[in-house]
Image 1: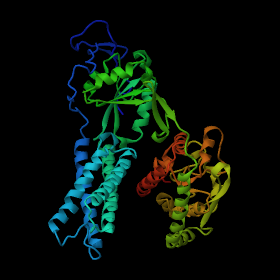
Image 2 (image 1 turned 180 degrees about the horizontal axis):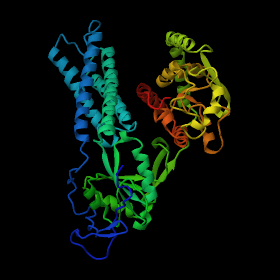
Image 3 (image 1 turned 30 degrees about the vertical axis):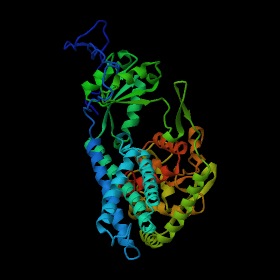
Length: 528
């Protein structure tokens, strides 16, 4: 945050023609008034092949180069592993004894290069899909299907009969898995660089009314790993709307947007809310940005709805934004239920030794039951008893009344970072989230899921209004709330995340949350 947050800088459009930017500055009520820079061309007088070099955001160039090397290495490694596995049973991709040079050229050069070509053709290296969202992984998967189809077609067309199908299939599947793993690790490194060093991001100029721009600012800065860094706000409702307001970035008015982007070193313009509905303005802005190397992003007022539910269908040149209903049934839900039951059953079998060790530690810390069972509200309002390892002394409920005034969170839940009712072993179980593992029993019985909104106590839950919507799905051991801050979040923010999960649920989203849970548990962030 800037130290001079209270100062809002803007400029007013003055009538007349200016040949350049004046250095004269006049201050009125802490607002900086400057003549605007004349707008640039509308995109017509330029070569169709001319493109301006991006002035700021060039992080994608070395990142794409690293991905090319990783993908090539992953494909070559998959070929090597496949050959080593099946070399005793077959001769590999081809009869290596007849022509080993050609065999190794195909296995370690041509096939990996084919992967790169088809991944590029599926836009798996497009900077718009890198570092955020599932599109990158979807395009890699499509590229893998294209590689398999191409290899099959070439084998059929050339009548190659001495291919080892097991070897080829293992090499292709292994390459796909290794490439996806490499992409995940590369994305993790990119997010760490963005979050800790503030590099490799997009510098955004927000355009719209001040409240709309501040809403977008809050949304995009909530996740530093996304790499979206607002650096300025261009308000469309006049400088008076910003008078006396505290803003995290400088605010301008009456300025040519492209000139402002160049001045602040931006590379992305985000048109927020109602500004995107101005007839013809968005189209003319897109014309103006052609060839400038500046990205144009539209942030509509439709919030907390993910991409799979949003479809654009143009009608006579008018792009209509369709919002589909959330998918709360069907084959995807069946797959989720099967995954829950299988994972819970295997988990309980494998974790028996750990459960016994935790049970002994709890009994030595405080005599009493090993498990804590409490009524919780589940799917469609049905009440069930949740399983947890006990982390508090047996008289914890009796001592709660004397600690109510020390609650460190808002909303319906009671949270204290140094709760005296928690014994030492229990504190470790909470920090490591081991106390939640017995809920696999609830998952196996169909009362809970691996991923979903956390179940709230039956006697404390206010399930009226919007909060009741979180009961449309089964509660989970982990969820979007847990991987986004856990106990450090406010009640309103936790509810917003739970409702977002309900409205945008998908099986891929569940897998993503499970993956993020591993990092959150290891970091012990927000657990107390």
